[in-house]
Structure formats: C-alpha cells, structure tokens
Image (tube, rainbow, N blue to C red; front, side):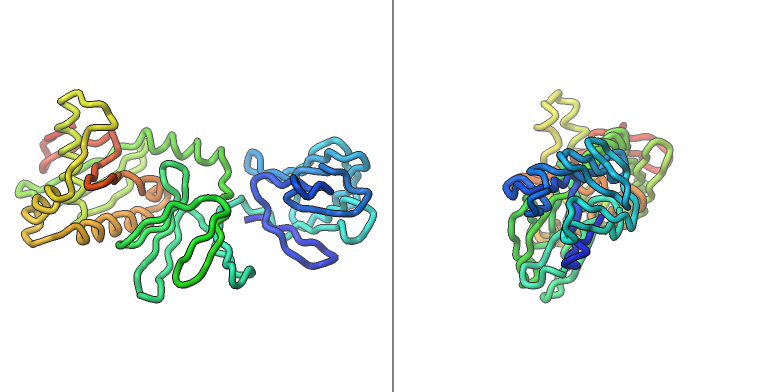
Length: 314
C-alpha cells in the first residue's frame, strides 16, 4: 500500500484509492487547517496502475518545487508535495505501492495487517485463520469453525484483539479477475475405481494443477449433482444444491470412514487453503463451494469429469 508522510509531524498516512486533501474536515481524507488551503484543495488517486495528484485549489500545489494548478500529474517516490505556505503543509511520498485493504489494530495503531490476495495467521487457540478476497468482491476471514465477511470501517474481534477493517481495493483489478474466473474450466479426472480424484483448473491455456486430495471427493460429489440438475432445466441459482445431511452420508461411503458436518468444514477449509497456495490465480476460485443454511453446492458452471481416459460428463 502507498504511504505519504507529513514532514512536519513525521506522521505516516496510508493512501486510499481516492484521497481528498483540503480545509473542509467533513469531506477531506487528509485535513489541513491552514487558511491558504482550499476547502477541496487536491485529490490523490490510483488510476490505471499509477498514483496521480489533481490540483483543484485557488492557489495551486508545489510538487518537488514544480507549480501545479488545475492540472493532474503522475507522482513519483520521494516527491515533496507542498499544499500551502506553512511547513506543516509539506508531505513526502514514502512509497507508491498499489492500494490494498487492511486491518488496523485498535490497541496498537502502528500494527497494520495488509490483505493481499490471501493471508493467514494462527490464533492463540492454534486455529488457522484464512483471510481471502471472495468472488462477490468482499474480504472474508475463515476458520474451520466460523466465517466473517468484513465491512468497511467496522470493528472485529480476531485472536483476542480488536481490529478495524478498511476496504481499499482498486476497482479495475476486480473486473479483470472476474473475466478470468468466468472463462475457467475445472477438470476432474477420476480413477476407474474412483478412489483417486485429480483436479485441474484451465484458464486460457494455463493449467493450475491441484493434484489428488481427499477434499476432491467432496468437489466431485457436488459437481455431479450440479450436472444432474442441469439436465432438469432448473434455474441456475437453484441447481446443484446438496443437503448437508445427505452429503455426510455419501462422503462417508466415498472415503470409507464416518464423517460429520465438522469434517466437511475441514475439507472446505483445506480446499481453500490449497487454492490460495496455487499461483498465480488459485485464490480467485475461493468461492467455488457455495453454502446456504443446511445446503452446499459447487458454484462454478464450467467443468468436465472423465474416468481414466474416457470422458464421462461435460
């Protein structure tokens, strides 16, 4: 994430995708009270992969001693930006990294957890917490036991500590990745005795190899249910759903052992964790298993299933 620093106070400020600088405290992301600062003096924003400053003021802005007035310029690292005459209005660009969402500790504001495509921590109960950006363009935290969908500027209790979530995602990135997901195809390759299930994800000629895992049996059951329902011409939002109780019974037979709903949660958690480790695009498919009360389904529409070398389902 990008950071600028007030030279006078040495205070660091994280840049959001759009930042308003001015004397009007109600609308300014960065408030400067000096009288020669306009109510809405300037805007710093992330655009087309770079950071830009747009001057909107009556007096103009100095950027590394170059005068800017009612115009826009691309920023560079170590630029010195001076919005007014006073030394307190001078800021330095520390870095110009792309914007990312983050969690800030309320007990120690200097502690910030940047959220890239995927992060994980272990809590004091030794339970792993996965943080990931979902297909509905929201950040989530998940353990085997619970799931949280974050909302901008809301407080959350994680690992016995209070955190504030700040959403800071560049919109153009979400559009590009959505296209990748829509074009991808899951390929299930199962052995003749169906004891092993190999899964690949094909994205425009790129193969993401998930290998053979026990949680792939869960995916296979759900994919077959979705294929079966597709023959019934059900509405897309209604097909593929499996009752969890029935899934427990079927999966117990597939894995030759007794399982319960908690074990299914473990399999889903392991699957998501595997996706997050699959570079470069595995994290984009973190929501292919969809849930609602008492039911679960495979949510991706493009897939095929083959047994040995023979195509079984497409």
